[in-house]
Amino acid sequence: MFTVDFDNPCKVHFMGIGGISMSGLAEILLQDNFRVSGSDMKESDITNTLKGLGAQIMIGQVAENITDDIDLVVYTAAISDDNPELLAVKSKKIPMLSRAELLGQIMSKYKYSVAVSGTHGKTTTTSMLSHILLQAETDPTISIGGMLDVIGGNIRVGHTDYFVTEACEYKNSYHSFNPYISIILNVDADHLDFFKGGITEIVESFKTFAHKLPNDGLLVINGDMEHTDTITDGLDCNIITFGLNENNKYSAKSVTFDTNGHPTYTLIVDGKEVDTITLHSTGIHNVVNSLSVIAVCDFLNIPMESIKAGFIACTSAKRRFEHKGTTNNGVMVLDDYAHHPTEIAATLNAAKNTPHNEIWCVFQPHTYTRTYALLDDFAKALSTCDHVILADIYAAREKDNGMVSSKDLADKINEKGGNALYIGSFEEIIKFVEKNCKKNDLLITMGAGNIDSVGVSLLKK
Image (cartoon, rainbow, N blue to C red; front, side, top):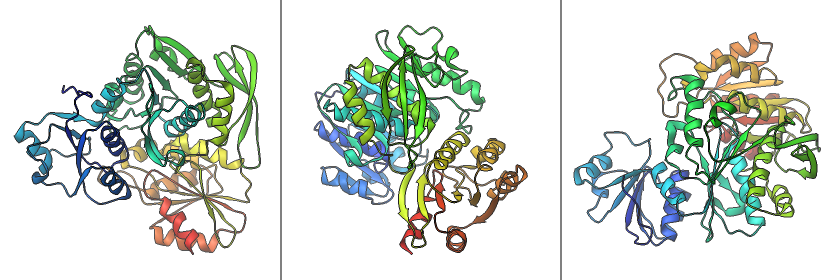
């Protein structure tokens, strides 16, 4: 594998530089005086920002973009084998690194590198930790999988030994990381297009990730999971558990919610009441997420006043229970990235603590394989909502082979006693919502695709 010499900056080309993660890595290298070029299929605010920072941006991916002065090419799994740039790179025998491999090498530069992993909650938890480190004036470098207002985007380049990033399990990309501290929030069946062996293979993947830690490092893991012992078996590093069960080192009790659904709870450490914590993130699942953050901060000797202030300052990241506005007829519009049954259940439970008349969920399933494999679980989670409207499945990297449809999901929800309607197109969904949603109803657009545009359109009317 090519090893980046950060003391001798070279020219690096990013294939797909406009992606949320790739752009962050490009910005880090620009700050380290590397010469950066990159291509993407379309211009965006992200590519324009990088151009302003000195990157050479090319729209479209053609062989001519791969010039002889390029020393390293960074790629993502989305690049196809017949991509003309990739073929040119191979022809010129230019060294290549995957996005995850480059991120892993960047992490090695930092003494306190923290990787936030888990099937659900990575972005929100990374956001919480980022706010606290900023409150504590640690000047961290942050790479997050969403747009975070406090840092003005998805990346912040600091000048200390603190580094925080998300660690995604898809295609085992996080196995290339080199963290000093790792968080495992939860382990659930997902990305089944890659993890053909189901939950058993996923658990093994997280175990391999945990074993990347050095002996003096720290694993912060959800102790309420059935897979915790399997993952931690044979680990030599420090291990701290968190969760709602009082047997964990970090736990919570006496959880209450304000009128906006924000929780307050009593923090329990080693069985003793320590403090009262208030969050500006919603839902009981974020109480659990916050416990992992407190565990990391205690390990790093971050003062409690910074922890509490960081939680107060931390509103949800973009597309995480994000309040979009209220329509002219008094319907509150929220948007959430939830695209797995566990996430949907957590989001809908959080919504129940928010003032409302009836809850409408406009859901866009994400990928055919996930919808097919978890159809019953999706139906169970969505059947608890007052009204569910199904848009067509967002294909993402897949093609429709007829295995499942949103109509199938609507039927399954109704079989379980729910109230679901398949409409399909965004245009028809908007018309239906305008006609049927009433004052003081709560509308949540939900999914990992482009369903958020429905809420945006409703608010413009």
